[in-house]
Length: 494
Figure (cartoon, rainbow, N blue to C red):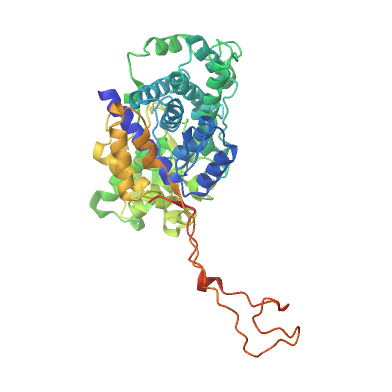
């Protein structure tokens, strides 16, 4: 069915993003912590030969899936769904022994819940300095885990009630490019799974968690439109938010991507050189300014690779200079490129009240050339969304590029085959096997022991034969390089 196909594509995209993050410093950190937290061996960690409790597995896996900012987005709600929905459905499904169809159904349920919780208050969470994915994510995780753990309706209501008190995530990471945004989906997926376990054990939560006088919307959004929320709930099961998602072509902030496409088209015009550009003027709505434009001095020279993902001057400049913006353009070293920073310093913005943000993510870029010409491009929706979706071939190519950072090509192909076959799979074994790293031991070559032979030479310290075990003189250590194989990674993807 179209729904199953879309769910599988979201799963593949999400897993590729998670695999790409495995070698990163933040990836290693969160995987180490998840292993340390442990729990019953019921759910697999992406990138490790380890199984831990489902809540701890999603803490790591959802963080990995969102950590490179290469994951899907729902415009208007401004949420990233797959990092929570896919990882929770797989972790809870593995723990519950579910089949592939049940996992896909749980994934879809999570997406629908997460989008609707965010769509009820479009733009309001960001305006109050909260990360929408962090505030809505626990409800999505509870929807997926609750479905797979077979909670009753009353238990699921209590699980949602518990989620409201665990919703958390501010956007202060924008000031210095620190890692907390990466953690938000992991922490909220962990909270959602924990909420379902608590509810199943009899723990209670408020039924009016969303719309109550002290509920989520009152606390985090300053209120809500009851009619809008009612309409969103009425369309559950009739309108699929899954079909409204955008899969990203670039690993950076969603709102910036139409601007980057505009820059790419401008670069392609008549072979325009970055050196010929004297000024770049962008039009934007007020909403994205605090996240992508200001403080402008910091955005013109991002302090690190992660901060660059939320700097429109850098993002536009890197496309115009290099013609690309892949993962390699967001390392700490890459964002210090002098040519890119020189062009970024020429980027400015003006407010355009006609842009209907957050309903639409619009890109509008005008360049002025040294010869006086002005060239402009505008794009009203992100590429990869419902108006211009990525093809299946593009999604699989993106997955292979990301997965190749952690898996050999044949294992990546096995993941693709397993995901495409999920709807008919009686269990998750094939997918889990393809995703699992294998732990290996570094082999050591040991020198042959030789019998000590008396050479007639004796040490003055003890009169023992040279080389004798009874000699008290410290022996010169044998060089490791002669006898020990080179150190290898503890984890093997073979």
